[in-house]
Image: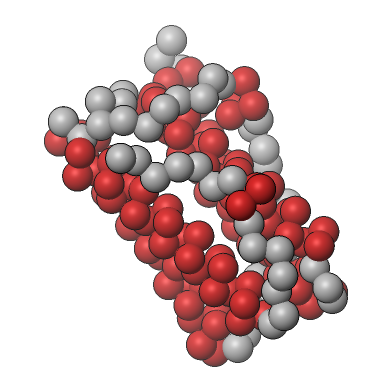
Length: 162
Protein backbone atom coordinates (compact mmCIF):
# COMPACT_ATOMS: atom_id res chain seq x y z
CA UNK A 1 0.00 0.00 0.00
CA UNK A 2 1.42 3.39 -0.96
CA UNK A 3 1.61 6.41 1.30
CA UNK A 4 -0.61 9.30 0.27
CA UNK A 5 0.16 12.87 -0.75
CA UNK A 6 0.44 15.48 1.97
CA UNK A 7 -3.06 16.67 2.73
CA UNK A 8 -3.82 20.23 3.78
CA UNK A 9 -6.80 19.13 5.85
CA UNK A 10 -4.76 16.67 7.92
CA UNK A 11 -2.20 19.15 9.19
CA UNK A 12 -1.57 19.82 12.83
CA UNK A 13 -2.98 23.26 13.56
CA UNK A 14 -1.88 24.01 17.11
CA UNK A 15 1.78 24.78 17.55
CA UNK A 16 3.03 26.23 20.79
CA UNK A 17 6.75 26.36 20.12
CA UNK A 18 9.26 26.45 17.30
CA UNK A 19 10.16 22.87 18.28
CA UNK A 20 6.54 21.84 17.58
CA UNK A 21 6.84 23.33 14.10
CA UNK A 22 10.17 21.68 13.46
CA UNK A 23 8.94 18.32 14.74
CA UNK A 24 6.02 18.58 12.34
CA UNK A 25 8.30 19.52 9.44
CA UNK A 26 10.75 16.72 10.29
CA UNK A 27 7.88 14.20 10.39
CA UNK A 28 6.64 15.46 7.02
CA UNK A 29 10.09 14.99 5.52
CA UNK A 30 10.24 11.47 7.00
CA UNK A 31 6.88 10.73 5.37
CA UNK A 32 8.40 11.76 2.03
CA UNK A 33 11.46 9.56 2.67
CA UNK A 34 9.20 6.59 3.42
CA UNK A 35 7.06 7.30 0.35
CA UNK A 36 10.00 7.38 -2.05
CA UNK A 37 11.73 4.40 -0.41
CA UNK A 38 8.53 2.38 -0.72
CA UNK A 39 8.32 3.25 -4.41
CA UNK A 40 12.00 2.37 -4.87
CA UNK A 41 11.55 -1.02 -3.21
CA UNK A 42 8.49 -1.92 -5.27
CA UNK A 43 9.72 -0.61 -8.63
CA UNK A 44 10.14 -3.20 -11.32
CA UNK A 45 13.01 -1.55 -13.19
CA UNK A 46 16.47 -0.63 -11.96
CA UNK A 47 16.21 2.86 -13.46
CA UNK A 48 13.08 3.66 -11.47
CA UNK A 49 14.58 2.15 -8.30
CA UNK A 50 17.49 4.56 -8.71
CA UNK A 51 15.22 7.55 -9.35
CA UNK A 52 13.10 6.92 -6.27
CA UNK A 53 16.14 6.17 -4.12
CA UNK A 54 17.61 9.53 -5.20
CA UNK A 55 14.36 11.32 -4.27
CA UNK A 56 14.47 9.59 -0.86
CA UNK A 57 18.09 10.69 -0.32
CA UNK A 58 17.13 14.28 -1.08
CA UNK A 59 14.32 14.13 1.47
CA UNK A 60 16.74 12.64 4.01
CA UNK A 61 18.92 15.71 3.41
CA UNK A 62 15.97 18.01 4.05
CA UNK A 63 15.16 16.14 7.26
CA UNK A 64 18.79 16.36 8.40
CA UNK A 65 18.81 20.09 7.74
CA UNK A 66 15.66 20.62 9.81
CA UNK A 67 17.02 18.39 12.60
CA UNK A 68 20.17 20.50 12.66
CA UNK A 69 18.07 23.66 12.84
CA UNK A 70 16.18 22.22 15.81
CA UNK A 71 19.34 21.06 17.59
CA UNK A 72 21.30 24.28 17.10
CA UNK A 73 18.36 26.59 17.67
CA UNK A 74 19.24 28.66 14.61
CA UNK A 75 16.91 28.72 11.68
CA UNK A 76 17.98 31.54 9.47
CA UNK A 77 17.07 30.53 5.98
CA UNK A 78 17.65 32.62 2.92
CA UNK A 79 14.69 34.39 1.39
CA UNK A 80 15.39 34.04 -2.31
CA UNK A 81 12.78 34.52 -4.99
CA UNK A 82 12.11 31.04 -6.38
CA UNK A 83 10.86 30.78 -9.92
CA UNK A 84 7.70 28.75 -10.48
CA UNK A 85 7.44 27.19 -13.92
CA UNK A 86 3.87 26.12 -13.05
CA UNK A 87 4.34 22.90 -14.98
CA UNK A 88 2.60 20.87 -12.30
CA UNK A 89 -0.45 23.14 -12.56
CA UNK A 90 -1.19 21.69 -16.00
CA UNK A 91 -0.50 18.03 -15.34
CA UNK A 92 -3.01 15.37 -14.44
CA UNK A 93 -2.51 13.68 -11.08
CA UNK A 94 -0.73 10.35 -11.22
CA UNK A 95 -1.45 7.52 -8.83
CA UNK A 96 1.85 6.31 -7.41
CA UNK A 97 2.69 2.77 -8.43
CA UNK A 98 5.69 0.54 -8.87
CA UNK A 99 5.18 0.61 -12.65
CA UNK A 100 5.43 4.39 -13.04
CA UNK A 101 7.46 5.87 -15.83
CA UNK A 102 10.08 8.50 -15.13
CA UNK A 103 7.63 11.13 -16.39
CA UNK A 104 4.95 9.92 -13.99
CA UNK A 105 7.43 9.83 -11.11
CA UNK A 106 8.33 13.46 -11.78
CA UNK A 107 4.65 14.39 -11.78
CA UNK A 108 4.18 12.67 -8.41
CA UNK A 109 7.23 14.47 -7.01
CA UNK A 110 6.09 17.88 -8.31
CA UNK A 111 2.60 17.42 -6.88
CA UNK A 112 4.00 16.33 -3.48
CA UNK A 113 6.29 19.36 -3.30
CA UNK A 114 3.47 21.69 -4.35
CA UNK A 115 1.24 20.27 -1.61
CA UNK A 116 4.02 20.69 0.95
CA UNK A 117 4.49 24.30 -0.21
CA UNK A 118 0.75 24.99 0.23
CA UNK A 119 0.79 23.31 3.62
CA UNK A 120 3.56 25.54 4.95
CA UNK A 121 1.97 28.68 3.50
CA UNK A 122 -1.29 27.73 5.16
CA UNK A 123 0.51 27.22 8.46
CA UNK A 124 2.26 30.58 8.07
CA UNK A 125 -1.16 32.20 7.82
CA UNK A 126 -2.20 30.57 11.10
CA UNK A 127 1.04 31.19 12.96
CA UNK A 128 0.56 32.80 16.38
CA UNK A 129 3.61 35.06 16.09
CA UNK A 130 5.98 36.58 13.55
CA UNK A 131 8.84 34.21 14.36
CA UNK A 132 6.71 31.13 13.59
CA UNK A 133 5.24 32.81 10.53
CA UNK A 134 8.72 33.47 9.14
CA UNK A 135 9.78 29.89 9.81
CA UNK A 136 6.76 28.51 7.93
CA UNK A 137 7.43 30.90 5.05
CA UNK A 138 11.05 29.72 4.91
CA UNK A 139 9.90 26.08 4.91
CA UNK A 140 7.44 26.88 2.11
CA UNK A 141 10.28 28.42 0.14
CA UNK A 142 12.35 25.27 0.57
CA UNK A 143 9.49 23.20 -0.82
CA UNK A 144 9.14 25.56 -3.79
CA UNK A 145 12.84 25.00 -4.55
CA UNK A 146 12.27 21.25 -4.52
CA UNK A 147 9.29 21.64 -6.86
CA UNK A 148 11.34 23.82 -9.22
CA UNK A 149 14.03 21.15 -9.36
CA UNK A 150 11.47 18.55 -10.47
CA UNK A 151 9.88 20.99 -12.94
CA UNK A 152 13.26 21.66 -14.52
CA UNK A 153 13.91 17.94 -14.74
CA UNK A 154 10.48 17.44 -16.34
CA UNK A 155 11.12 20.26 -18.79
CA UNK A 156 14.52 18.83 -19.72
CA UNK A 157 13.61 15.14 -20.02
CA UNK A 158 9.94 15.12 -20.97
CA UNK A 159 8.82 18.33 -22.63
CA UNK A 160 11.93 18.81 -24.76
CA UNK A 161 11.85 15.21 -25.95
CA UNK A 162 8.28 15.55 -27.22
